[in-house]
Length: 407
Ligand code: SF4
View (cartoon, rainbow, N blue to C red):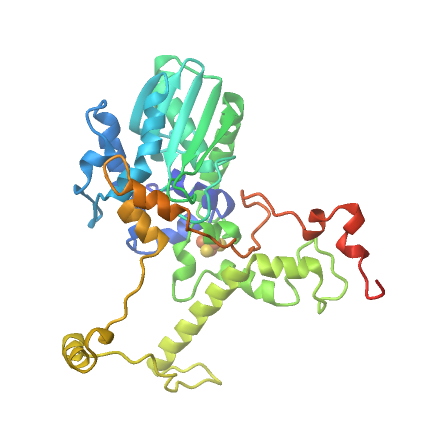
């Protein structure tokens, strides 16, 4: 294992669970990741605002371009609106503020480091604040290894040299693009004692990683961190094995003692549905790889490549087509569509740096409806609260289960 192996707080959940992943990832050439590079640009943007000591607001930087790994991001009104809540909140906190502090994990993982977005020290409380710029599934703050590593690194790099050891660390995740309505904020407290215990786990993980012989262990962390090993041509053997086991009769682990492996029990169904997205993605990759092999003249046994269903028709020269259609149909050559509520909101809703049209927007909000989302099944570790079963909506007298064909 190379002495310079980079473990990094952002991939700690994967590394703790799959200690062989660092070794396998080192064999790959780094591919660019636009989402990560965009996140880095947004971190620099927030850092500039916070370090301006109140002279700059996010809106003042609209139009400015930030670069990371060759990726360019120009700040828009949306970026500014997403950043402002977190920035306002940070500015209101009492205590000493440190922004984009590089922290070392030397006592637990030699040569490993990270950068803490924001830390605020106020007497016996140390706040570790982390922006997540992804949208979709909320990132859980509870027991989050990345934030715990930042807290440890901050303790070692900044606090201990000053003789400070706060008894509580408050870990915060701000994920502004996540929640509908624009804000997702979560916090979780951990004591110094528990944090140091986590440091002992990091020592163990580090020793395993550096041994170079730790096995790869597949699980939800593969998908959560989009581990590049499973995207290679052969895929990750451990991940392949997990997929095959999920679909085959042997997939049950010790806690699922099924008498008949051919039976779809609730346990078996739950396990397969929980992994359905990953199974679909894995099958799609196999399909793509098989097509590539066929194009290369190495068709997989039992298959052949034939032309697929034709796509939708389109005009090869839109300008020429517009002239002909316009001459033939006049105004009817075009279709017009009313703006959606989201587009209307962008144009009309007043904001801190946007006049908008208050009257029109408030009249329009009366006309906006929204269907409930169709319920989806997710892993029980997901932070979203579970829906109540339908039967809980009926009281005892009109319980749905009391109805029968005889009634
Ligand atoms: S795909 Fe999963 S099992 Fe394979 S190396 Fe990555 S984290 Fe480990």
